[in-house]
Image (tube, rainbow, N blue to C red; front, top):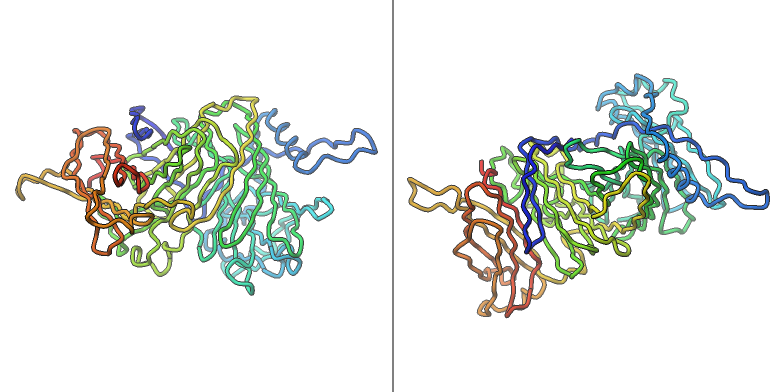
Length: 545
């Protein structure tokens, strides 16, 4: 839950970012496993639609949409927990010892896709309902069966408990992504409206969500929840798969359609229709959730053998005007919220740009293999902003980074909103980004006045760019670094080509103005023409340890 105790904010016209500090530490999201939302209301079945014997039933998507709309017209009711006590009270070791039997997977030997379920229990105390839609559009519920699971030694005594009419904690989809002989796990729905997706050669890291409500607001965040899923059975040779979902929360209900298209790049097309129960202060569309503990730009000591620890190291934004903006992530001392105001934004995402093992030296977590996720609007989203939330954390087990798009118009009770976007997996950058990119951001002390009286507020910034046309630029050409700051001043701005022959370094010293936060914008140009993306960084003087 995130709380604001200060409303101090400033706007920076030239880079369109707003910074909102707070004097209270916020609690980041626990990552392993993610904590589910509050229990949703029991979703009533829609009335049978049968105006005349000769008329067909409405399409399934229309039925679920009508159900979500009707649900939004009723008060939200938190149901009683019905999970048997032995499962609701199980330990983490017990929960992780319960494994789904692969031979019981849905569509096994019938399609390239397979579906395996997660057992309810531990943190996942509100099971979801799963349905299968056959090629004839007939719907059947997937009932719980203890024989689908293997109970390891810590949980062996739970296998014979009465567990009828319970459902599942979620499910995962398998597909031959990296090898024709093996079906990799590539998409997981589990907990609230969270889901994770990976591309070829990647392992799980960043999460997506169906919806974010009131993230960073004084009253606390609301976590909507997918309560029921309809999984369409794919044909034997199908290379895509469709899933429908019903979402519920105290403020919003909705229907989602996910179309999964796995390849070297895994794509999830998302279509959603939302219905507001109450006024929503802040609606976060296409939210992404990740972890940043510390990186190369750290200014505090972390007692850790690894040089860097993070699932993502930056937020990428593509504006309507075609400008690429790179915002390195931080682990601030206080909750920090920045907004990129961009009407009809073309895309945004959280990226793990540094993909070198030597940057992490972690042979277990493999942070160099974590996926990046890119959100690409389908059509125009209109006026709004991309918001980045950075939450202080003292552990890598917490998801402390959230990014999403906020429409300018507030969603009011009784209103509807349709949204469409494409979610893509990526590595360091999007293939269509042709400009040079930031490859390193480093920050350190740049004291003056001698060793006995160093000025600790003066900071040295080193930003390295590579890629694009920079590799073709000779060292003797008049490369320009255009730097703008919202407060304070800078000096000793230099640009040089490094010895590797492909990287250009910009270095400067920043002198903040007292305790004011500094919002910076930096770009490389040759004879007035931009050759790089825009580096955007927010510096807080109190982040120095």
